[in-house]
Image (tube, rainbow, N blue to C red):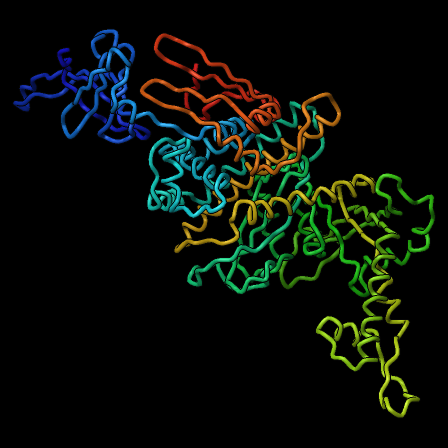
Length: 615
């Protein structure tokens, strides 16, 4: 069999691949030399490098059908042909070139990304050099690996189907992190919120976005980064840290926004910055839901000035506060069984209070009637008798333990010593062997227990006590996001050497947590649907376990052949879970796998996010 002859060819690089072009030479009389003209694309170097096997375009194969009988590779500056064996159809070298990739999990993640606001927002925010595909591939690496050390990414990419098929080494990933700028991150936040609002409109959901707000600390081994300083570490690590604040949509569990601050910035101060960011990013129609760490009067005033909805859990233990005043006023009414709500299983009362605040506070100027505004705040007061009794019983047991140690003349630990100083006092001893004795001050014990079992939620938007209670209970989603980020995805430590890389890496980790939370929400929703219908039973598995099982579905690649192995064991049951159907079609010498992951995990979206789908 004679070796085919090729026309003049040249390799040209694009942002995503190396392409093969034919050309013609034309004499330029002015420059007294020939020039290449009339370029025409005829193939692609499939290795992603300048050298490697060439996949010819169909039109070029129609013009030169003899090329179908050979494998062509570019080596150095030449082209090497190897004939296909007629008897077996494959040579030994061709058999060795067959490549298998883990494909099931990343294919499912592709569908999830493109079905949520995450995919379109990422593409709009990072279009240059197709960085959105590279970022997404790094995110998949974080989601699917327990040890997500970036140096392991090249090995992962060698064996896994990814949105970005090219190689990304650790140095390349570092440059990608440094290319992620604050303006691009803000563009992403804006696009995600816009996409979520569009989905709400389609679903005829007129409620405002309820965003759970909380923060966590992320430790770092570097002490040279300007934002990494020592503060109150919530994980009790003896390391410098940054504080990460996040907003999560209470209904969908989708993280919409984050900011990182210096490690020594208190929680209460971060809310003012979030409100300022909220105003700049035009995040409209939102209600911020926060716990006691953020419920200061200043933060309430800032929300009112910027037309931001709020639902704050107020501190009940601050002496002389307005919170204690409203509890004292309603304490007797909160024992009335007619005030007990069957749904929340708590006694509840709502009080309307006219709240006065400075409209535009000016430094060194006293507020006046002309500069103050008044807003209506709904103070929802709850009393849970079971919690109060449980706390009381626990305190009595701790006091009893202290009495036992005093009797045995044993030393007290730090917590016991603190309680001892709070509720015990000296008394005259009648025992000659015990010159000093101590008695319990019942008044101090009553004061310590007076506000236990109470909760006060304040809102300028939610007037119904039950709705406010339910909205606050959904705060667990932001805490679950932090748990996913730090435990499930292993992002509790940051190993970076410069601030630009830190900003980019935190964004990629935030993106990984966002997608993992969507997967978890889809699994939970399907599990609930199974209980209500005759769908296949679902044994609870974590999102990591489900994705790990799907990742065992292999994709085989050879030349223009793409096949998917049959689904066995747990993978088959998870495909039932996600209503996953597949069909293998024979088309001439090509095998094409068509997969559709519908409704539960993908919601009818095109596969291969960011690239042309298989036919």
